[in-house]
Image 1: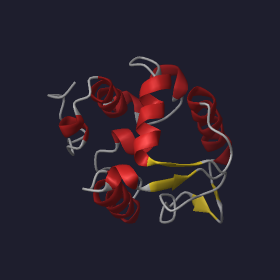
Image 2 (image 1 turned 30 degrees about the vertical axis):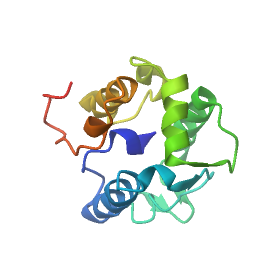
Image 3 (image 1 turned 180 degrees about the horizontal axis):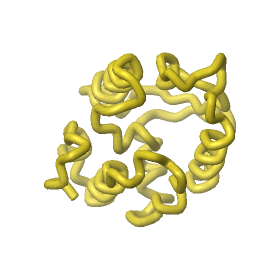
Image 4 (image 1 turned 180 degrees about the vertical axis):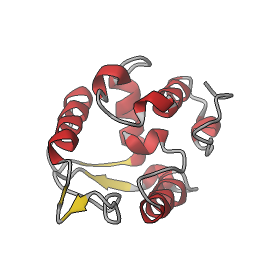
Length: 143
C-alpha cells in the first residue's frame, strides 16, 4: 500500500534512499509490474534501514501491526501471499476506493499529506503515467 503513494520522503535518509531504490527503481521501473512481492509479518526489505526497526519488528509494532491487519483485511490478503506489483495494484484498485484510506490507513502519520489518496485516485483513473511520477510531498497540483 505505502509504495503506491510514496513520494521520496521517509523516516531517515537511509530509509528514504532504500525506499526510493525499491519503489522508483523496481516497482515503478520499466519492468516494475512484474516485480514479485511477498507479504511478511515482520520487517522486510523496505524496513531494513528504518531507524524505528528493532530486529525483525518495529519500535512501534502495535501500530504497524494494526495498519498491516487493516491493509490485509481491506485487500483480502493472506499471510506470506506472493504476487506481482501488477497484481497488487489490481487488488488495490478492486478493493480500495478513493476516500477509503481514511479508515484503511487510520493512524498513519503520512495520511494527512494526501499523497496516498492522490495516488489512489490516479490509479483508479488509470492514469499510469501519473502514478509513475515522483511528486513532491508539498506539490498539490496532482490532487
